[in-house]
Image (cartoon, rainbow, N blue to C red; front, side, top):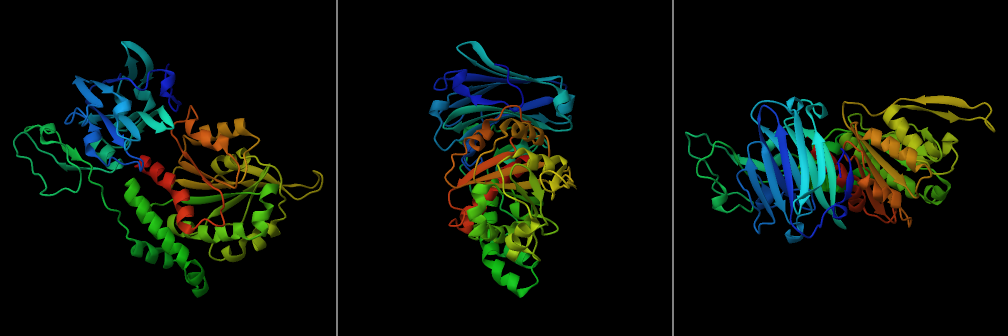
Length: 471
């Protein structure tokens, strides 16, 4: 199989996943290139540095992964069946040791062979990159069974930056004329001493997570400081406190200082007929109350763009401190927008590229065309929270929009509510052809009964991992 950027598949379709196979990576270029494999846990972190396989550590503890190097080529021998259950993902990377960029390489080749036969191959060139110093080439990850994803994305930073993105730091480096300086205590599981050569001109790394900049109290104070009216302080404080706890927890988990992240927040609400009960019984209004702190945390203007969708879409007045408490009654119900079917593509297309919606009229006569501007741009990332209780009737068109968005500065978190199976949304993680995975999905059966912790964790966990890849 020839892997193309964005492709995902079950690895068992091409090799015996229970037997050893060989991954070979090579780069043709004018620099010196380092090749690494990161063994990542469920939280997306390199929590055990013995599973960082690179020039200074060429084997994992039980030999599940071994590495041989020759010039600008690396061979990783991998046995997935021997990996501990704590390792959820293997990330294979290449980085420049010294000057140069990945945009200057002639070629990067990635292959998987088993029983002396090549089964999978991927070819990239310098035209696939720009000024990046590293490449995240391929990921092999568990999702029921082992799967492979052709990430094929450049990364702004070298090996040290890659390590930091996965929760580790460089603890010392030495030149040929100096003795290494080793901290007296490092709060991590350290590799055995023989994995570090006595004399080397390259840095040594361990997975020491860096602490988030914001404490819960600091973040709570920061958000509450944006609220002036006493009634709003009373109404929102418990949600702000709970959001702060989740943000700090996810910052530790992902290695991203989520409390200092900036993003344009967009909430997309299903307005199909099956949602009528949730609007009538106050569930949607209660959810809106709990989403207001997200805007105060991430969006510079403290407000949230709101869209309703059914077969088409309608852009609503922005959600803010001035209108949140009766938003369903005074904004949504008063808009005259009627409930209908379930199409995802029109609203997503409008958010990423702008569009035209139609309002008013009768039987198609007298309708008014309303133009909406695109939200997504190259400045701050756009974070779309998409809440729906059913699947869409326009899957092919939605696929096209999501493929297009994967090249843009936007992350879409789908939240499925109720008893529906959401098979389409569950399969988005395996959508081929994407430049990068920029969608998440989580299911919440009862949105009203979910506490703040459940809601905020479902909303933010995958977004924080996506932000880590932006660094």
